[in-house]
Length: 455
Image 1 (cartoon, helix red, strand yellow):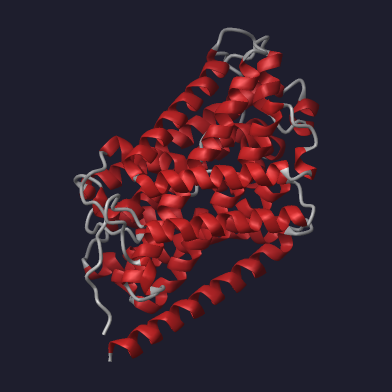
Image 2 (cartoon, helix red, strand yellow):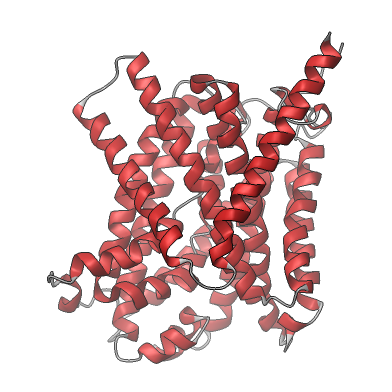
């Protein structure tokens, strides 16, 4: 019979502000004004800021459903544990592997994004076609894994500091006096026409994609002080703050690029272009550095969340027994952290050796991650409805919350299926389904082996 005398994670040592840092880094908020907002502007035009507000409202509805569980239970298994406790072990495997794929793919995408922004600062020309990009991706994942191994408190303080500084720089760029200032009233962006719903619809999927990962604080479980209050607060604060930031970014970038859309469409670094347009070229490299560090914080957050999910799955018999123990001194899931680091590097290496550029790697892996997040959210919504029925907790507000979250998620699923016609992207749903089935089969095998060894 297997021994269950294994080291536990460190209970109650993470503060409220550190939990917020974990969720904030999971979104990589500086990356959205730099890489996603311009895409939404190209599809939604003057309605882009409204598009982000609608996406934020949908994710706030989703956060309410997540918090139904977060205020009742604290587990390192994140949404997987919530689904398992309500729907049972087998349905929870869908949520477990969907979110695990999402966190791993996000970490890999962020490693590619880090290289995109960091290497040009070193004047390394042609880095996307050389081994330099691979070295940068491996190096940043290794550093993030080391921090996650040594302890989450230091990691979260680093993440929070990085994101606050990066966001402050972006807001400074938008708010400085001048013709492109955020304080200027741009009446074009407040006009509602018969085309407005169509324009919002075109950009809503991308806007939703920019907010996924906000729930990563739930993976900390009882490592957080007063988890039943701190984790729910971290979840909704993260959605609200980042959603408003993205709406403000869309409003400001539309003002700045309205007369120069070619620069927005052709340049992969719009914030740096905006710094030059506003006569502040000195901010351009600082913004690039901020974006690079934001990607680093995202890798760290994904490593933390994925490792704790693997840790809890191992404890539940859905993963190898070896990954269910914490380090004796650091009280972190060290074996799971090491595994996550290796897996995050693998797809970047495979795609780069197939001559795929770093920017395309970011897009491909980010889209794959979104498939995982949406699947996990749908499973959580199902579980939240079941929980509400069991506890007789249905009200007008809860019905509206479920409906709002469900509509936004269904729209994002539709957008993923209908808009990914580009070569490579069209195969992503099939790739995700294959990975999901493989993971579920692997967990079933581990569960059967555990049962056989027990008797």
